[in-house]
Length: 335
Image 1 (cartoon, rainbow, N blue to C red):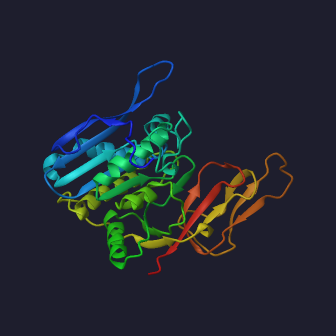
Image 2 (cartoon, one colour):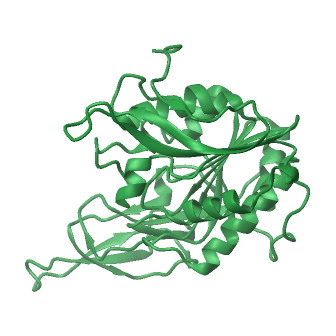
Image 3 (cartoon, rainbow, N blue to C red):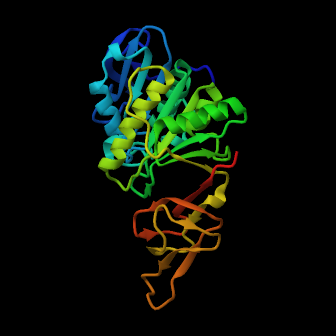
């Protein structure tokens, strides 16, 4: 499938200077619209030679902080402030964003599990293919803005795949500090080949993502972190000259190196959290009680942490099934 032409077509010219707004047209023939297309918003702001950056949100449609922040940036940013090019894809999985869902209502596609995609597949696979084959090769750096969505909430965190090269590692630390979330996290490579992170690695484009609160809402504090962080990253990359002051305190540098950083529900039932976001926990600490609401006379099942760490993420809905993620830990970065 490599080298096949994407069926998506942009209304904008990625080589032209100035601010251009328009849509990626994704052909979508259905009963109510035989020759229709899906309008995926896209923006290009270019001014001469310089770094090229892709800013993305809405990879999951129920993650709203990045979508709001990028919409505000589109309206505020003048081409005269830019040296190089910024491509903005504020609602990458547009059908999911319109539905306020993690996955697309058209094909149940999870965009961040669909790379490298398929030019002849369903809508989500086609979007993934266009991003990997057309957008990522055009840029030097991609910032993908996520949050916990409807089912999770995070302490605001930036994430980056841990590079093997020492110079790239130090550059990654600089980017975590530039964004200025509460935590800056280096992650291992064992999370599969179907994420945007993996797609960027295949193309050779530097990548950073975020997890900005969540819970199916937009909070003022998380939005402030997102807006300031985007501006600082653009300045750090040399695309713009001005940015807010560095975060105070600077982010705590963390790592996630394996699946033992995650805690899952052992049984279905009602989730009683036993720890809070930001807590420090030890291995085997009780994380949550899962109450069987169909047989309430039974004792609850107890979920326990598999390792020591800091709680950076917590489940939001109270009803759980066996295998639902309850918590996510990180530990201090080991160089």
